[in-house]
Length: 62
Image (tube, rainbow, N blue to C red; front, side):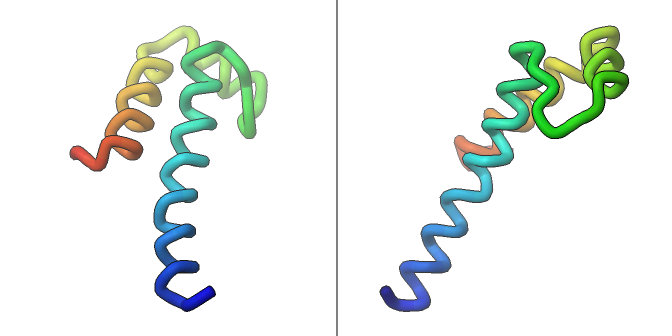
């Protein structure tokens, strides 16, 4: 595999992994964060902001 293909694969995978964690937070799953941080996201609008961030990361808009 050439360096260009490897770099393209990484460039695609990183935003998808970022989005996966944020989708988990929107669903109420504390993936990669403490329970206290998850409670804070649930108590504020941070949960929905995370959802917006993951959507922008995958769609390429921002």
